[in-house]
Image (cartoon, rainbow, N blue to C red):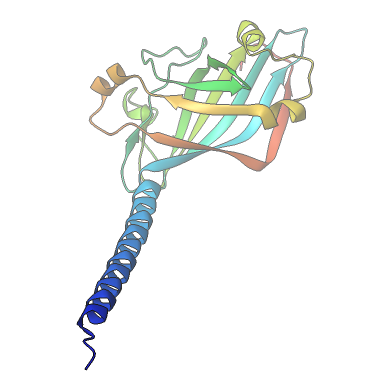
Length: 202
């Protein structure tokens, strides 16, 4: 009479391996979905909606208009370094990159829709509550555009596809607020408004 014990042992071992493999795969998929859900609740979207370019007789100035949407469940703190016209004590900024060159923009948070305190308190102005939208402007001047290797005469619709953005949060700014710093994912609107600017001060 033939002994099938070794075969049963091998089959049992194979089934056990398959079971643990399937279990590990399922757990990994669940963790991925959980991580995606957690990520979507911590990252705000910053959408480029408009670009303003001064006429050459006024000077070289290129500015990017963005809407930052806080679709997370928490209020976020988004300090920015300010502009020449509206300087800020903060160090954090949005970097602009074209190909392999990068400069820090002169960035201002001009308003926060839905935050009634935004114009009354300087520190409060840089808070974006859940469900609110902030308007941000990033300005580059002639020397910065030269550093990016950007030909000022190049039409905007050729410049925009190659432009990338990155929010750089400086840790010392954290002392100004108990709210967590914003994390941004940059996007470009399907329709970007191009504005020709013929005045020197907004």
